[in-house]
Length: 293
Image (cartoon, rainbow, N blue to C red; front, top):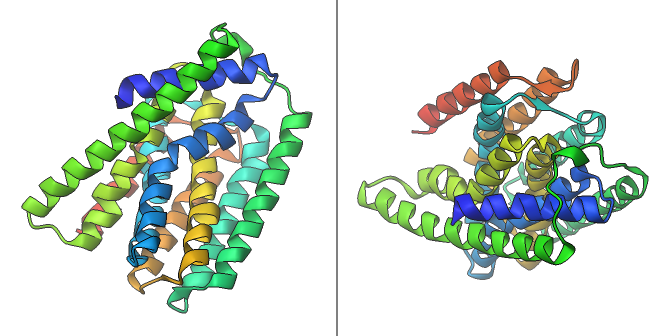
């Protein structure tokens, strides 16, 4: 479900981008990013509604770390990824800024209602920026997109999204049962297994996009997903109930921040995520995993 769903989702969203003259970067930062973040949103908002709001931060921060270090690392290892100028100059710095915002809001131990509303306002500003980008941008990668009808593109996107979301849900449940059977702690499960499970759509979508030569979707998917996770998912959750931010999450959020800065530093010169950077990202995650283990 995950593999086939990701293929259909990337082809469908790329087809929509070409048909409606929308830049692939915008598709990656919005439709693909929000769609593949659906598992994180579902898990985090449901946790807040059920009074288990502490799960919200662990799931989101863990997913954001995995999104950068494992998913972009794996994608770059498969093929070097060219990055749009606006991604290096605007979207990645904005992702760093919202991660700092999360760290600042949670430093006193709780993300409050007003801080949640502030995150939602920042998300509205981000959507406004994407709207401007969509009006001004031009699609530079049309040669890599298969010519398909609008109906087929929409069906492919919808069916692909359903398959990756449902497939990740099944995987999360199964992986959690295995982890519990092995006697692993809930914090460890939340930061790694559940976070990885809810990040599987991003993994398969970005790797599939990288293999098809749609680098803007591969990069935009991850950057957009991380921004979406913090601003919208935690914003909504904190608007429902104050979200606990335990001291251990400070370290995890700093790792997420370091991962975001690593992308910026490694791409700011020639706007390309090279294979050695992908390998470095995977090694960094291995060190982080070993530390929390």
